[in-house]
Image: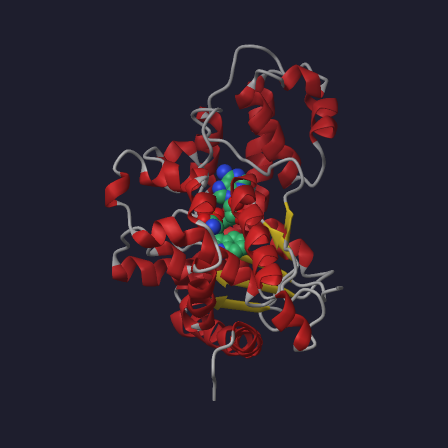
Length: 344
Ligand code: TYM
């Protein structure tokens, strides 16, 4: 069955939005709005799977929204909202808790990483997190999901859940005229030279919001001087840059900085190496600072301006939530009928 193309993605409001979030996800969100209908969600229900200070959570929800807007997502043509305002996400997640298998969740590497050694003490929400993520996407029957590389496994689980629901309820789905499948199998969009941006301090670690060192990442709200300092201090090796991509193998820090440059400049790594092959890092870093400041400076400045206008941000979220809810409620009605619940 052909489903109408629809893009959905989400970002957690857990502070320190960084270059990885931008290049791996938000920059793609902006590009996709020219070719698709898009729904972009600030996933606050996901954030509380680990403890969040309430005042900080509120601030972070507004900051992620400001980032979406400052990067250029149009909240009128598309939908920007926060997850907790559309109760259908949690409702469908419960049904998916009953569709997904324990064995599937036990394989999730992100849970293992986040729960660490003290697994007994992790929240049940952190464990069931991928089921909520599947619900986020499928409550809109979305077909395409732009994300960074680290979300690939969760997306595969979303597809497994959609497929199992379609097959568990096959007869019920068909008898209600929904064709052979009620849910699409959502496709991950993981493309380009920066799908996994690495820490500036250690090329073997992902750039992350929670790294103790602020020098490991470039935050979207960093000013020009901070960006320059972080790029200059970024770890490198002693060799000049290679001219061919093969020369980046086993040089994770060089590979990372070249990938960042390529993504910021909308070219590929080979193009960057053509320009900088043979150059010393000091020269390349100078160009990277100029490029990063030119691309990120205006975004950071606009974010800072917008978070000062909470009423405007909250208005965008309220409007987006009511429009999202209309679609989600329609899906939930059908899901309840398919499952066999009695409803008003
Ligand atoms: P989150 O909030 O951790 O990250 C938001 C987006 O940024 C991407 N990302 C990166 N990309 C490249 N390099 C990095 N170092 C890097 N770090 C983060 C993530 O892949 C993500 O695309 N579970 C999701 C949020 C979510 C979601 C969804 C996404 C909830 N429901 C439904 C898509 C669809 C998360 O924690 O992303």
